[in-house]
Image (cartoon, rainbow, N blue to C red; front, side):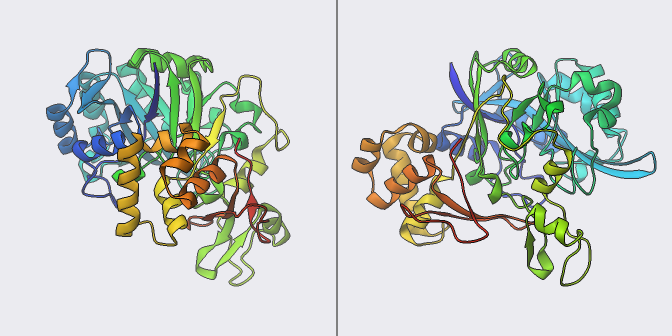
Length: 412
């Protein structure tokens, strides 16, 4: 069966997260979006884990269910540690096939740090050691480096990471077979590194509120069970892993380099011209994802490996409605339009990806229908995000060229 999965979210027990990030609301919004499989997030947190055990129906195949939505047990661990004289900050996503496995993982990790402090715990634990612990408990788990290019907390982060996966995971490297690209990069950027060819590149929302789940996601055509999904990712089977749904990476808040306090936003070329320093305060710039990819890439822009899993760039429906109406996406008018459209057409993803042009134009206001069609064609304008600031995205008028400093994108 074909289904959409979002593996990486956080519960209401993580910092800066909506109080509605509970199973009830996550399930409701998954149905609105058209997502069939959700990560639980935060299984390391004792209160959240008890809620999961009390709420989810065990299907006996490594997955769980609530109100028609499937769930997979997931958690994110932040590792902050020193290695060979340097400090590293790495985030890893963990999946587990059972509560029994989760209990064992929590028992061991609980001896290494305070799991109750946050839904995403911070442990002084080497990423290699974390992987060894998890795989020794259950080899059917997955350890997936999270948002691998984010400057401050990731595998390849410019401020906190490594240049090679092998330097991070050492002996555990062969057991890592999937990587999360993060909001500020897309698969095409990752295709420029030949060292990543063997890995499945997954995309997830990393959502802290129900409305944002599915802003990035994965589309599969396989049996909806843990073992099969793991096998598809391990073998990078692009007949069963169909494509990923992506943010336009420029919209991510670390795509370009810059210095937010000074309002300086730089492309990689501009950063080089300024020797990595902010021209206003003379302090080092936060080096973003695009520059970091350029540093490590061994292939030209536009290269596509033979076994690549394709992707589609989308903009969330509420943003399209908001722009069409000239209102903020949190306004009541936008919210009313959103729920009306989803009620009429089934799910947000059905509207964004499946409805024909005729169906769109007949079923909604012309401005919104044309907005959806423009996004499908890549007719968008983006002022790239930098140093923690999200990019500014808008839907281009037909034939309109993007202003200087902005980029118009193709869909694939």
